[in-house]
Image 1: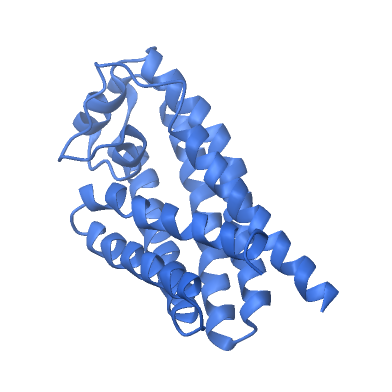
Image 2: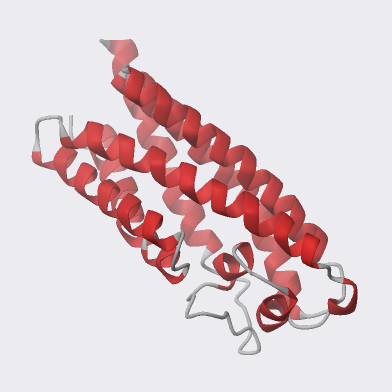
Length: 218
């Protein structure tokens, strides 16, 4: 039991780290008013991840060099830490649940993290390139890994949400409901990319619930 409790606390602290890094990613440096994400996508970062062409890159980042390109660069470096945290959390949750579904969810999450890293490298490459030299293949090198990442991340979130919803206790069921809602919004967001940002709200609620469950409520 002491070992089980220590594993739960590790999962709780990883959830806390994920919440903290989400807050940092949404903080400074902020994007300027010149950054106008297309298609109703509220976040410049998400908008660049799913940008369809060079014109959309222009509306998000502007011509190189620009303050918005530097802000994007910094956020990508921070995102590498976030990737490490959420991959570790997925693995910790798989250990907690100890089921084939949990293993599938963790594998999906780990692959999502790898794709996230590939996407970040592609973004770091494009922020240094002027619009004239930005090719469609460079844009696609961001978009396609990103869409695959989101699909796998929301699959993992939905599977863990289902497992939480089957456990006793209002908090576990609340975590499950929030995670399932995030997965549903996220999958819809693969078709209407504006919903990818809104899926982050119930996902964040689920992370906060996990932190409370594993660290505060025995």
